[in-house]
Length: 256
Image (cartoon, rainbow, N blue to C red):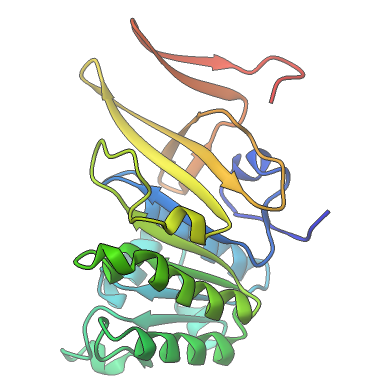
């Protein structure tokens, strides 16, 4: 069996037959409010607690806000940064502002993909990263969807080539069925889709593993929730939408 990387998300590894195969690049796709950033940050922080260094590429949020948001869940990454085991690549501020001047890894022009890749390589090598999260990769091609697959492939070559297992967060519009860019689903090794659906006036969270190279995985849709300690997935429950509404049932013995 291929070496596995445990996600640190309770219940998730059961869906992946033990975890994400090492060096896989996983597209974490979903609409607004589905918990994509939380999932990615949880994956990184768990790795830090297991001695696996990590890099977070911030494309949509100020690095200071990333640290604050992670701390809300009890994931204080500052000591890992001080120990040289964790790095945030600032691809958001462009180096503008007093706080940005204190960041070590800054991409001056996030639209310049070669520049982003250079800074990312530097951060990965400096901390000896084994895990990488890019949040969100779709920001890089939102206005140029025709280059979506090429951008993802460039990132994949660098991240996988340096031996990392990665989560590329991908945004989709609420209700959209795709994965956040033409052709990106073919450029990655795995796809996990997070959904937040309004059914009969109530919001429900669920996820499904669309594909994952190198491992058997659940083919069912499972409910999950966001708690004050992060995401929890329920691998023994199946989420179904019926004519009468939502049906969440226990998986019988022997089922997958």
